[in-house]
Length: 548
Image (cartoon, rainbow, N blue to C red; front, top):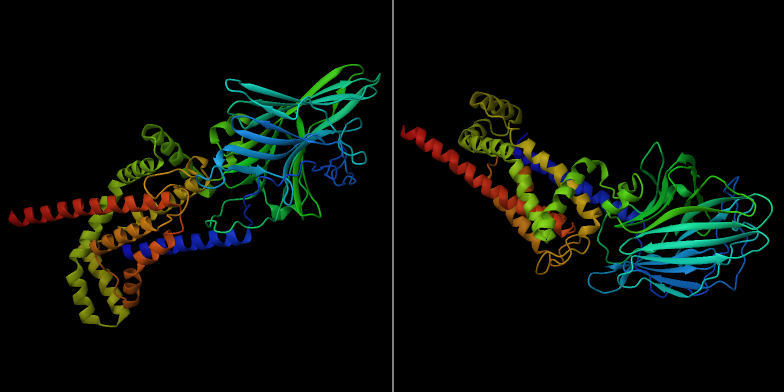
């Protein structure tokens, strides 16, 4: 296979991948920015799905609780709204991440109102407060607003339910500075003369179908649920599966999550229990995924405690890896993760030195191209040998004309006689494609690159170039590379396709993240430089041999 044909093959792979990504974009809803005023002050969760101790297919009755209220909690990274009915988190804003580039509006991950995305937890079982018939408990608080102060490392918010004749429960939220993980403790006091039994559950609820955000860049980022078991560290549970399947798995450890582009929420129960993971789907188009811990017995006139961790924030690989085994796998690098992870590790270390992600991309391109130089030299040497054969190839074409069979036989005989391998330049080109796709997933999934600036007009390396400058430069560099390479394709139609390949690539790459286009453009510039050096070296050797 000639090197030009391998280039065509790569182009077709890119086109196919782009079309597949676009198909996924058209068939998987993307969350839109939610109005900051959407959650209602008295939004009720009494009609929420409550799992039962023996089964999880029943729905609670719809009751309106007028005594419930919304309290607010603010840390240096989170702004939450908590409904005292059940103690559910009904809104979560991420203060360090803007909705749009430089608009100053924090990204809203969780919300309630027209579209639901909330985190719930409670106590079920024979003596639990959260019951299908009775509904959710109403907690009391000492304040309506809580905020972590400068220099304060921890903030504790207590929601209290008092019943002198049954269970008194304190639902305690523990927030830490610069942390998206919230510890949720249940301190249970049994006021009766008999043992009591409860089960802690935690679940995430989200509307499946939400309007697509207009003007969004085509991506294939996954939006849906996921869970982990002791056998499989990471499993996707797509929104399309909720209506037809019921997740019902008993596992030691484990966690459940809702995932979207760059962000994730997850419930992580205690890691020493046999937990039950479950899912549900209601008629309002809301998907529910959750966990139940084993029953907890509270002896008469005594106190017991149980807890879980809720993570609400960005896909930060280091922070999530510390919270639970496999939670960092929600950063989905696709089937090329074995390439993407080392590339991301190297990219972050370069960024730590340079302080600019665009410069880090340029440096990693130099490293990748430098590491591939031995193969590149073989490729370009093969190209030079092919160029030397061009007069003989032209003579064969003149001799055999349109007889393709004889032309093909004569060409192969010529290659054999001159000891030239026409496929010698293919492997380095094919080797670049997995690296290219692996970097695509790095740019798509890495929160560090979201809205990361380079310079001048490139203010978001994870988004397309707004003025299409880089794609045009990339196309020009491809044209220069093409002019430097020998044309071995004899078919006029293939020649025409190859001629317009740089234009086609420029159009296709215009919709890719600008960081990826920057990588490809710099890679082309390095290839042009390497080509000139290698070709010049070959010419010098030829002149030296001729002179001797």
